[in-house]
Image (cartoon, chains in turn yellow, cyan):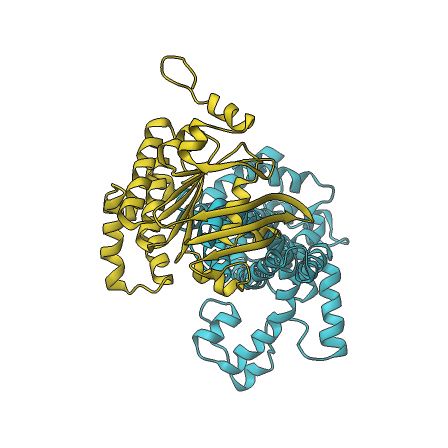
Length: 257
Length: 320
């Protein structure tokens, strides 16, 4: 198992906001985490990135990536995990890019941060942009000059260029309209197929998760209520709550599943 | 134009007769009439205003009653001196205030934040006249570290004469390589600069803290943290840069405030600048000089606004 999470518990001021008993991930696997807002899915994502500390959150339990315990890492060691082993894309793709920086500058700085020489960076950027179907001229743009879909694909290109093992996608399509959503999901699928990147795909929308996920975890009020392969969760949900979420998926023709 | 009308009316409608102020309390009626004629104080208010306005249009702001020189000449002499003083004070405000605010944001809710907050509040709440006198008492009277008045030690003129380039000793000394006088001008600058910079430092620190914290909560900061950037560059490059525009707007605002404060500070430190000139003009009901000073200050506001717009466009591409 590449990533093994056990008894993960995230709390703020002694109040537990999310607990995840088990979460396993293999290379190239897509795990969907579903749940309404406040269910603890985004907090789980932050904990997996080691970012809860910046909001004064406390994480206990165990998170092992390739045999290495992450929870005991120092801030300096965490920095070397982020952007090399694990990366994240966010819900509002344009707000996630620094407004005062051209995309190329951000891209180049990020690759330099992770040890790439100038000669390596150029070709790597162009290649990664091609993988997400973006023209290299976008590097000369500012975030406010591109669309939300382009911004999200750019963020995925960053992740592709970094060759991370795990990508955490926190509601990556929720702020986009439906046709753009489909583009982004295609790009994510392509990322997994090409580089074997494992993806944790977080969404409140089970139909989007169904497009991509091999395994599904349903969360509510900070707890995991259902967990299993995508097939079993979609076809034989054991929990009333999961059935409710599934019933919320609109089906063409008006019949619900 | 609006400024001209308003200040002209206010200056002329305040009680007190400039001619009496000029000619002295024991002047005869003939002398007063002569003074009135010479300075265009005879005739109705509207005639006086029309005369003044046509002068302004030709770059003539009249003759000052208390220096007896053309106001334009006076302004060219005193304004650069003040500009140097206020500019140095504001540079200091940026250099000290921005890091102070950044430190506060970095240690939010902890000791560093509290220290920065106390310093900022002290800085913005100390009345400038009180601070100026306090500085004089401590650093001149008690410690004797720095000089207390004027632009430089004029006794140095005997040994290393200062050549005039633009008329501001500190700049002239620098440009002509007169290091003896330059050192003296710097020593004379310290106290007035601190007195003027105090409020801007506090204000800049507070605004920097606020906008930085706002930006630190943005998704773009979470993103660069997620990409593995160290906190140092998260702060210095990714969070600070989008925070700079409100800080620059504030600097322009406090520039105007500092200019007003220079009226008091220059009087206390006997600094031969615009503020000192303005105070003396007001004391002698010197209408042309008061109007001239007001026009210059109004002009600065306009220029400053333009500069702010340009700088903001350079710093933040969203403004363009």
